[in-house]
Length: 261
Image (cartoon, rainbow, N blue to C red):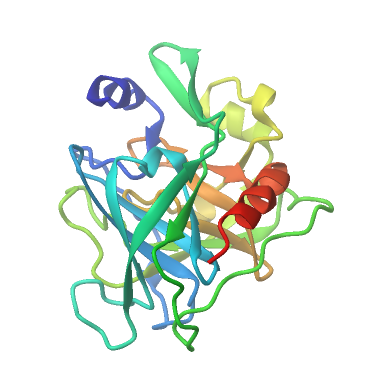
């Protein structure tokens, strides 16, 4: 698996991977404590050094990125400072991991691979208790998806400097501008047009921000989740790529019915 990830570092890197020497958060700021009660922190114990995020869809289900499927996962909800044992925190082990069956890494040439269908549902061993600090976020409707030019936001506990071990203790957030996949292809110098239905791109030089360790976190637009943090350039420059949730709503809803408490 490490060989696969090392290929990505030439341009695309899943944002849960800890690789040396890259700036991971640009223009972010501390979130107001518990202002994003759907946010989940994923503790992943496996062979790789991975830190991921996610978000609560239902009292017993969290949605995250499929490439975060790297070991035993414990979900922490209601957290602001993950280095502290906060009274608001609820820690729950994962009963079942359900990655999208078509998750894969598509070769784009020059040793570059793009994660596609990069989403995974986590069934918790027990439902969480809803409080001001722990609440699910709504899924979007099946109608029109978020359009280029829309302002959205992302959040997570990713790296805050060029040192991969310099990880955020408190939840960070940033505003991101959605751009077209065509524009994203041009900025990243690769052909992404075949994946217009599967991905969203966000981030521009005026409002640039990227995260390492925030894979699986939500792209939130007008109070609903529209994307899942997937990958981006290893040097931290925009734009970044998100899994487009509207494409996968039928699979998400079908799987949720199977994951009842």
